[in-house]
Amino acid sequence: MARTVRLILGDQLNPEHSWFGRVDPSVTYALMEVRSETDYVVHHAQKVIAVFAGMRRLAQQLRKAGHAVRYFRIGDDDNLQNFGDNLRTVFRETGAERFEWQEPDEWRLDRDLRAFGQDCGLPSACVSSEHFLDARGGVAAHFQKDAKRWLMESYYRVMRVRTRLLMDADGAPLGGKWNFDHDNRKPWKGEPPAPKPWDVTHDHSALWEEVRAAGVKTMGSPSAQDFPWPVDRQEALAQLKAFITRGLPDFGDYEDAMHTSSDRLFHSRLSFALNVKLLSPLEVARAAAEAHARNPSRHPIAATEGFVRQIIGWREYVRGVYWAKMPAYASANGLGHSLPLPAWFWTGKVRMNCMRHSVGQSLETAYAHHIQRLMVIGSFCLTAGVDPAEVERWYLGVYIDAFQWVELPNVIGMSQHADGGFLASKPYCCAASYVSKMSDYCSGCAYDPKDRTGPLACPLNALYWDFWLRHQDRFLNNPRIGMAVRQAANMKPAEKAAVKKKAAELRAGMDDL
Ligand code: FAD
Ligand code: SF4
Image 1: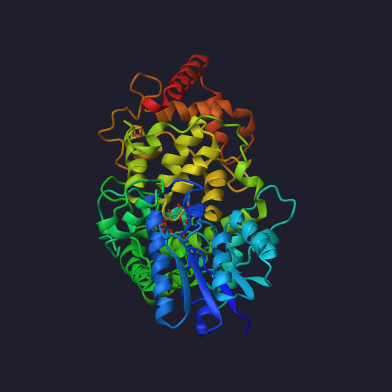
Image 2: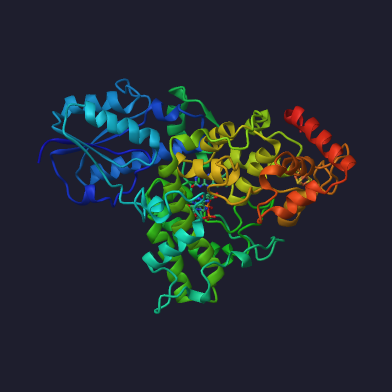
């Protein structure tokens, strides 16, 4: 075979990729920690550590198996800090005659690597990352080209049939329903006890020192000595097994619940392992379906279906939306929002308990579960009217699992409704009543969840009602949200004026909430 250089990106850590099936002395695998990736957004410290540690572990495993590996550490003198220049170094060192790379998941990298492949002077080829269940264009192919919105549920059903997950022998969905979301809405009051964290911890202080010495700007706590994220496949499989045994049984019931005593409750925290491809979506969804088949009373259908839907439905679907809509999707701002993010998004120092807890936890742990992301942090930004591009940059930086193909549609589409309702048929937002029902955040908060416009009224209330008033014309005829808009529209003029005044004051003083 021609002397070949194969590039492995930081989110392509699957040691079971067919590339590695046999040792070929003509192939060199190139992995590189580069500033072009650490600096395009300010990432959480744990994300930088986790990706680099995962890359180093994979390089070690490949070398041990006999593969040739060229590795650039972030602080190496000969590291030119971008893929193109480093690849040219490896081409020279190895006398490369061919270049190959795996399909990247980010639009930016896809564009850059294709351009590099054309200009590098070698025959080149992009191969599949062998990770996703569907092709990049699979979601787009499922929907009518001119459809105003793509409903995830219809795509999800096709994926259930295709994967045969949770289907009976006659091809009907197990339990008689496709979707058990309706059953998954309980608040959590301390029972059943939240399972013990199933993280594998290691010490990454030395790596963190290298990152710091290289001058990489990060946000949040590195937690380097007690690092909780899996960095190889064995660790990720252990995390999956622990979740299936301990978390999945109650995942459904408490999927939407939030509590100050647990940052994850029954959520899996598998998103990092999935997104860097230490785990495949099919094996994760299968593990859940098989647990249900083995013991349906311990792993009820509602919990199992809810979990499987996130993986084979939402995860594949948002990826399809990303590839269909980029690059325009990144700058969508359908509601015309323009406020800057408050400064406390980088410190967590805010009096609103729900925000302090959710933002603070995100900065401390690089993790928040879906409802914290959607109904607390995202809802605040949406109702306050924060510029969706600013919101997007923050989410892309702060979360351990934030890679643009999955983060961007969730923020721009699902959370900020900036795509005109293409992805989500209604804006996801709430007032204090929802937070108070689904969490314990409101007890002990400096603000009053029941008050709308008084001096200590919960800020979410005025912002929520003002949001519907501001966008009344757009949403009044939407059957999924008509009630909230109509309620806002039917407020007495004095009430409307008070809400608008309060919301304007809140917006003017966002940094001081
Ligand atoms: P669990 O609740 O245990 O769910 C299991 C798995 O399902 C997750 O690991 C994830 O792979 C998948 N999943 C669940 N919901 C979604 C979804 N809406 N889209 C895609 N996959 C999903 N997820 C990311 O992986 N990266 C992101 O950057 C990201 N940003 C988000 C931003 C916003 C505003 C919102 C509302 C959601 C975002 N999500 C993102 C989706 C979801 O919140 C996270 O996947 C989830 O919280 C990760 O925690 P978990 O592994 O404990 O998930
Ligand atoms: Fe959040 Fe308002 Fe409840 Fe305080 S009262 S925790 S600000 S919802």
